[in-house]
Length: 266
Image 1 (cartoon, rainbow, N blue to C red):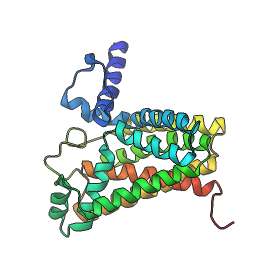
Image 2: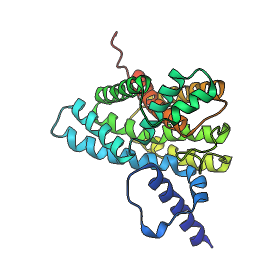
Image 3: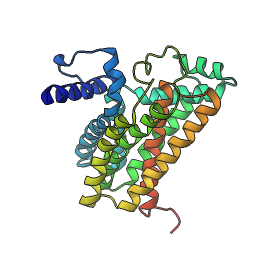
Image 4: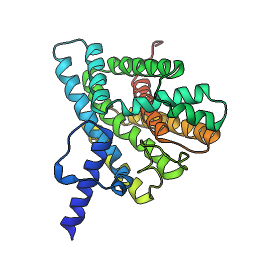
C-alpha cells in the first residue's frame, strides 16, 4: 500500500514536470486528466528542477564569461526548459489588462494567441529586469537566488488556485488543474519550496534577512496581482498563474538584492 501511494506521488510529480516543462518523463508515468488537477502540489518542486537547470548553465558560463552574460544564458535556458509557458501567460495578462475595458474583453484578449504592444513591452521589460538583477549578484548569491525564487514564485501561483475562482469555461492551460487545491496540497507545495530556503540559509549562501525580504516582496506582488484579477475579471485564468509566477520571481530577486546592500546611493 505504501509503495503504491509513493508511486502515485512520483507519478503526480512527473505529470507536473511534463505539463510545465519540455523535459521528457518516463513512459510508465502515463496520463489521466484528473492527475493534473492534483499535480499542482508539486509545482514548487518543478521550480527546483528549473532552478537546477538554470544554475548549471550559469555556473558553467560564469567560469569563462562575465556575470551579465552568464545571467542572460541562465535566463534563456530557463525559458527554453519551460517552453516560455509562464512568460506567455505574463504577456497575455499585459495585453488583456492593458487593452480590455470589460471583464469579457479582457478574457477575449488574453485568449488571442497574438501578442500586442502591451504584451511585447511587458515581457521585454520583465526579461530585461530579470537578467539585470541576476547579473548584480555575486555568482554564489545568484545561484542561491535562483533556487529561492523559482520554487517560491510557483508556490505563489498555487495560492491563486487555492483561494480564487477560476473564471474561464475552456482554457487548455489551466482547466484540468485550476478548479480546486486543498490546504493539504498547498502544504505539500510549501514544504517543497521551504527545503531550498532552509538549505540556503543554513549554508549561509544568502542571509535570512535577505531571503525574508525577497519572500515578502514576492508575496506582495502575488497578492497585488490577485487583487487586480478579482477586481477586473472576478478570479483567475491559466495566464494569470503564469503572470504571478513571473512577477513574483522578479520581486523575490528585487527583495533579496535590496536587502543585500546593493543600493546605488550609499
